[in-house]
Image (cartoon, rainbow, N blue to C red; front, side, top):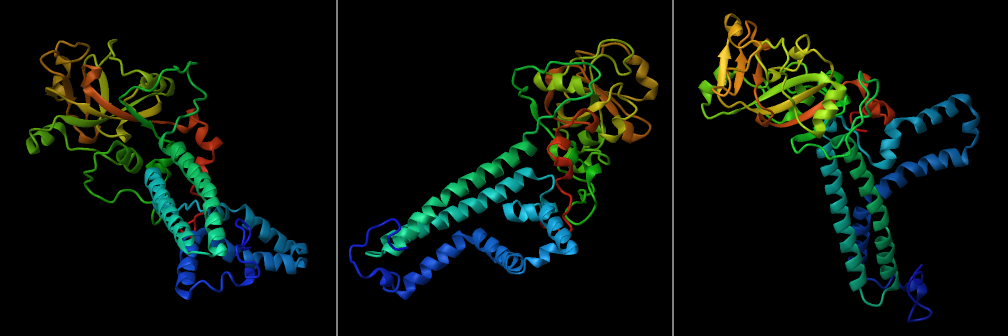
Amino acid sequence: MPELFFKNEHPGTENLDWEIVSVENRLIVLLLFAIGGIRALILFTVLLPLLFVFGWIPCLCCLKSCRELCCSLLKAKATHRFFSFNCNCPCYRARPKLRFQMQFAFLIAVSLIRIATIIFCLVIPHHITTKSLAVVVGISFIFLLLNSILDYYHYRIWWHYKPKFVRLEQEIILPNTTFSIKHKRYLPYSLLANQRTGQHGDTLCTNDPCNNRELEHIVIFHSSDYQPQPRWSELKRSNPSSDTYIGFHRTSAHAAAAIAHSDFHRSDKPPQMLGYGIYFARSINNTIGKARFHGAIIAAEIRMGKVKEVTINELSTVRNTDTWHPEFDTVYYNHENDRRDEFCVYDETQILRWIMVVDSQHDDKCSDYGMDEEFDDTKCYCI
């Protein structure tokens, strides 16, 4: 081992090379090596008993019950996550960015410790064993790099998601252009609130009312139960300087794909209850029954501008017309049931940014990649 990478300058001392290293230096090297290789040590601790059991007692594999237990253990997603150190704690659900940041921070910490190990081993003079150990630790960076690439790939799959459009009402050719600068991202439908189990770490947002205005948070945690803000009139009374609002737009999957690469377009063909423009609802759940098309939901941040508020008795003043513009930028309908409020903006330039979710019947990517089963088999609430 001492002459694995370096030539011994003092023949006959091969077996004493490690012994002549001071006790303090030995402890420091071993401690740094153990911390830097914590993953390998954990795997070794788990695999060694398994190898002993199935290596020295092979007859256990012949028993049907033991064989089935072994196979189920090897096939379990929790086992795969353990060996790949791809923790799937439910607390990470809907937080792919946090998950990647935690993994990346861990890799950075391990890398720094391994660099410290290499430097410390190299500065110990005249000891081939420590220098050889430094080379071994240096080679291990290849595996750290591969691991970081895998983590980044996992992050991209979830947080830079692109649907696989299927069973569309109209055949479309997706543009080769980049997404609109207003398009923040698609989200996989498996992250939505209606996919949650309600168990620890996989619950909805408990803040009531919730003041989080991040589009991702609203869609992921409140897709069926959320009114993102008070009515427009109430919001203006409490915060007169406010000019933005969160709205929800339901449309077909192929229309959503086109919007992602371009922009919204005004509806200018009757009947249009609030006049010609682009329609949004105040809550996701209450877009059902109002929208003429289904297949995708869009959550958008909107600059409201000057708002004309109407009630049911005033709808005739705005129906099938755009004469309310340019005096007003938006028509806001105060419904008798405030959950069913909706509004119409005149111009697509008022829409600042959006995120989209394509329904499961028009997106096969989640099922093809196993993303809809990503959080199965997590009874231990960790892996």
